[in-house]
Image 1 (cartoon, helix red, strand yellow):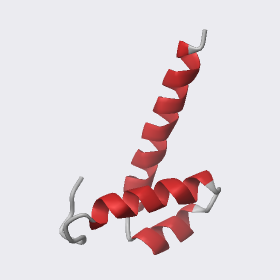
Image 2: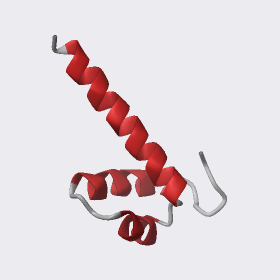
Image 3: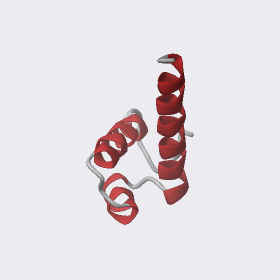
Image 4: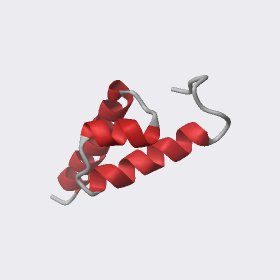
Length: 61
């Protein structure tokens, strides 16, 4: 979801930073503050990551 808050390429960079922060168990408020993403955008990243992890785990069996 590209937004006018970000210049070209900045949204993708913010998403990658958010993914890294999530992997390091950083809290939602800190992620929002550091990336300028909304809470809903961060939740979407979490849902997508969880779906990918569930997909990988079901393929193991």
